[in-house]
Image (cartoon, rainbow, N blue to C red):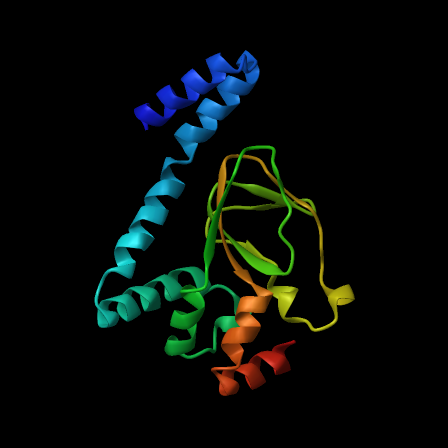
Length: 175
């Protein structure tokens, strides 16, 4: 962490970056440590045995997907596969979240979406399963704090559903 700050400070000084931007960048670097730790942990998990990876993916799936209605009746195996598709994103406070066509799960932070506060373990974007794009809500979201999101993209889910026809039928009915 300290090394990253030092590298940034040298770059900022060499390029005459204004003080207010330097302060924002240092705060972002400090706050993003949680995100970096998560990414490092996921890399370590990739090196584990197949059985351990499946067990960990099942735990992650239960933790992150358990509250998402469309996945509540899904098999453990399917949820595990879905969990392996989750992508991590980190946002600065006051930053707009310009992600569409995906489910967003708040891991850390606070998001304002259509007048509602969405905090850790809450989600939005479940309507991405709808075929007709015009029926999906596309309200802009804004981070009120430094925020880490896990996302599941619609295209990744559709690709996975080809491997799980029983889940595909159930999710189509939910849509």
